[in-house]
Image (cartoon, rainbow, N blue to C red):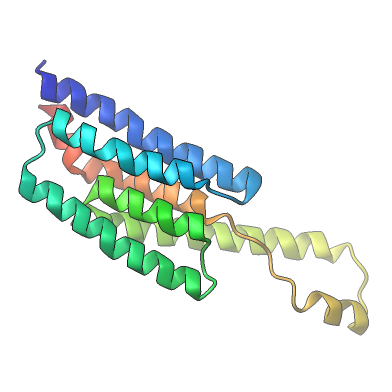
Length: 172
């Protein structure tokens, strides 16, 4: 096994682990620390150099991250996702590149939809035991369940990774 293949296999552990940490942390604390998004992004360049990623592909990965950062902050400004989610989405885009990032977005959207449905259902079921009066329902109207979208991003990234450049390098 060559050095690039060994480095490729290591990257197949680093990136998914970072995404799992982000997803689990978001579920537990409803927050993705900036240090995790920055650290995940910072690990990309050494991994790319260690695996011999061609410069053209490297720049495509950087461009993908930039597009996802803009998309993420657009979603953040709409109140759809949190700021940590937007930054982690860009870090994942850096690792996955184009066209794999399209799968990442699709898988994340599907996982996010399932997660939102599950959280919404849980919210409704837990409210079922509450009081049923117009005043109580009016008080609950502005409430909406919180969805830790970092979990959906982690699921999307892990599902997209087998289609990434790193998998081809690790396979040799």
